[in-house]
Length: 440
Figure 1 (cartoon, rainbow, N blue to C red):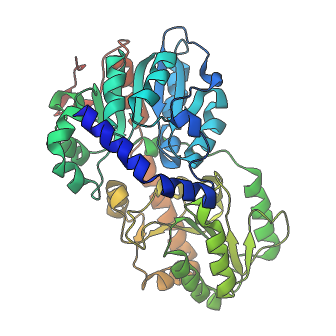
Figure 2 (cartoon, rainbow, N blue to C red):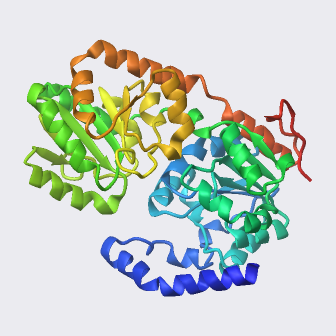
Figure 3 (spheres, one colour):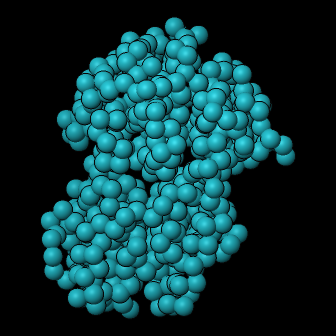
């Protein structure tokens, strides 16, 4: 199976090479870390730990944010081990280097033996920790063969991915076999993993690590913008984060309705993908709504328009400025994005109806009346209503904050299980009403 998979993957990469080259030329994507992806281990990883390496893989920005508390605790509790982090995307790489140190961060290699083996030889990982669901067959097989234990943490199978996983169950049974432990976000994720072939004695429910992410430290831009809004008497401030293609036009149109009754309102608009910043700027120019670009703004009052947040790594902190927040990827069928960042600031949240990727989080918030779910036609009226009702805004934001606090603890449970894999102690996550045993 593995040789056929490797041949097909190599063929697919070769056939799609023109696309990758075009994207690299147009947007600068995939050029960074090209050698690392092909197996060239950077010199900065040469440092050797006392008792072995813990390799944590987080695909993109969202996963890096989710595992930052886990990485910090692993380093604190296991100082004799070295914790390194790999990512796939450029945005995830940038944030990981800022949070974990450039000398500990690298790009994840292609899932081909010649690219993977140099990292396994250099790092000699004792434990490999994979965030969410990155099931690369060659990597899992070779990492296990090298002697590493493998854990998939914060594991989830979204509604969108579920049909595909079921279709390939016969192959996935073999792909998942090297994994020693699966720590899922919910009981439904556990059921789905079992259905696609994960061994029952290796799957535990530990909760969602993202609920444990601490509020980001204040950034200079936050205080600068707060002063700019205060100087101009801006209100309300609507932070629209992680927006995707097809949403910005809807949001700007809804904001124009808000401006009709709240002339000093501000919308902070943060597209999900950096390569779309210029496209969204053109959309704003065409709309006629006054606008500012974060990369060009340094000071001065802001009110009655849209601030385009064309930056990386600032959105989580800027949510604190919002009188309300909209979390994107949800007005159009893209599965939605993480609503916990604004919730941690006690900011009232609106989302669209396409939230499959965060199904359980949104459902838990809905059960506590801690989020507003709206369609494109309902969005303008919902924004105007909240803009005009400070009491309801504060109550909705407080319920969101309480929903986050009620579901913390996944990091501690995950750490205990990982320590079990390192033979420091046994896992304590509960499964089927009892205490799980360490997989052999």
